[in-house]
Image (cartoon, rainbow, N blue to C red; front, side):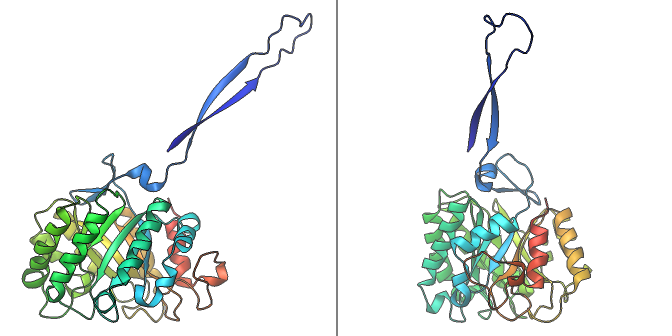
Length: 335
């Protein structure tokens, strides 16, 4: 909210002579100090062609971290860590990566409570939050479609009045037989209406080949409002050809959200390609493509932004932050 601070200045008469009639006038100067949170400033988001726009219709680029799997590194997805990322890294969005398989939600329904904790933290911090149905080893989104419909119906009903919630309904569909036309689009056509019963909020839809086939929905988009399509990259594996694909897709009028990226190979480990990472960051900045980087965790793999000894509740020194983490932090801090 905007608070108005009133400051009174006493102007003293400095001339010589009789000062008995001199008055001490008080001048009130109103100074507006902006104490709005990021969400209060930008409000409910929507899609205008290829652009993510705020409540005023202005294009916006969100930058933030993705958690790693909440079943493994959920302790790092907490209010204090998210506050550290907001205050000292410049984060404006956080992604809660709720794996469905691999010990995730389908076998551990209590992970829904962790998602609620993350959303509540984001609400309190005034940042945006992505609720991610993190398909990976369960390659085809149709396999667990009914569970997804139930989950997103519940989430949309719960957060119907929250302007900061974004729904990502299929992380990385993959496999040679999992294509836009036969699996991903049919899945989206069933899941999206469950969200739309309660919310007009932004929805991100994954694309084929681990969310790289953005050319498919560009040629055959979903006929809903406020839809974005996910593209994921790892800079040491994916180069200019994928940037060209994104440019072509956006040229056809669809909006892209990079909900996962890293500077290393697609394995998440190995050396950082600094040149390609820089090219990707410039590309996303120039095209106002929002992103969440992989991942807020302390594993020994290159993708982890924290060193193994880093505590889970913020207060990190430079010695606690990995080389990958420093790249992400430094770019988030850019205006």
